[in-house]
Length: 240
Ligand SMILES: Nc1ncnc2c1ncn2[C@@H]1O[C@H](COP(=O)(O)OP(=O)(O)OP(=O)(O)O)[C@@H](O)[C@H]1O
Image 1 (spheres, helix red, strand yellow):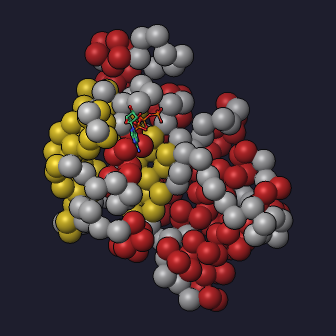
Image 2 (cartoon, protein in one colour):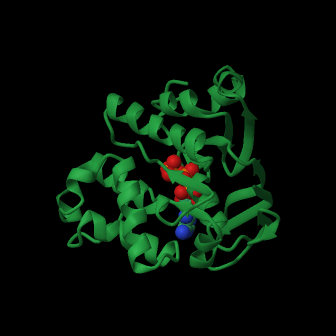
């Protein structure tokens, strides 16, 4: 479904991604982890066209999408959430999600409403659908962000720290919603996450970035006992 081949991205003298290769199969949930500043968000930005890589290629379903504009990539079937959601605060939840379906998913007006309502229901925000987005709390904003990404009708969904800032029970609730997207809807997911319990519980496979390079890749069990990974995280407040 997705193939990242030897991608390099520099910011001035800083090499944020150094020859990174990664592939994801259809229906897989890949956890993407790594200490702060290891290049996770940069990789998402390269895949979704927000950054043009300095080297390497990105292929989606066999099509070379390297350097394509973000809206075009969305329409090809790659959706994403952002680490810091920026909703239209004075628009309602429904309007926010409909906008994503309309512009990102290319749906007509009535279709957009139907799609938006379906995903709002899925993320359990139905009771808030007619409230302004600015009235939502942290969890609800995250869920609305997820509904917006889903409304663009993605085959591949990139989630950037979706559960950051949530309490442990909210975290597992949202993590389970994500797992169901894969199991019930066949959506392929790459999830960047610092909350190890969530990543290790729901991922099929985990990919570890460290200083812009691949450090390790394997099942959650393999990764949590990999000495290289444990060392990379030493000094960070994470439990593998
Ligand atoms: N637009 C930019 N301009 C300059 N440097 C950048 C830019 N975006 C990212 N970087 C740098 O690239 C490196 C990788 O950053 P990135 O945000 O991808 O890491 P991350 O793994 O997502 O980190 P975190 O877990 O803290 O979100 C960091 O050193 C960061 O400061």
